[in-house]
Length: 154
Image (cartoon, rainbow, N blue to C red; front, side, top):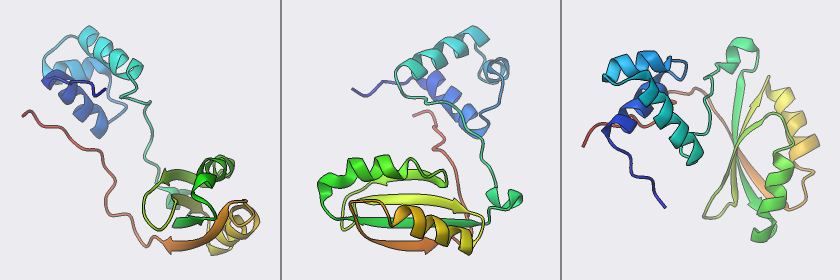
C-alpha cells in the first residue's frame, strides 16, 4: 500500500533530502510547524518504511578510493539471484545491488582504491561467486549528479 503524504510530509522530506543533518527544530522553523510535528511525522515515516535512515554523501576519491565501477551481472540461472546477492553483500567494497530486468540479473556498484584493487575484488571475490555466468563492467569517469527527488506541492 502506498502511503499518502501531505504537503507538510513532502516539505519535511525535501528539506532532509537536501541536508539529512538538519535539526528537526530548523525543519520546523522553515515550514512553520512545531518540532514535535516534524518528529512525529518522521517517526511515522520511519515506521512505515518510507524513510530508511540517513546517510552521508562521501567523496571516496578524497580518501584514496578513486575508482567507481558499475557491473552488470548475468546469472547462470535467474533463480540464483538471491544466493548471488547474499554473496555480494559479503564484499565490503560493494555498495549497491539492484535486481534488474533485461539481459542481466543484477546491477552492482563497487568502490575501489585503484584498478589493481578493483582487479583483486573482481578476480578473488566476485568471479568466485557461484551463479554468476559473466559480467560487464563500466568504470565511472565522474559522478555529475547524486540527488533525491525534491518534492513540490501539487
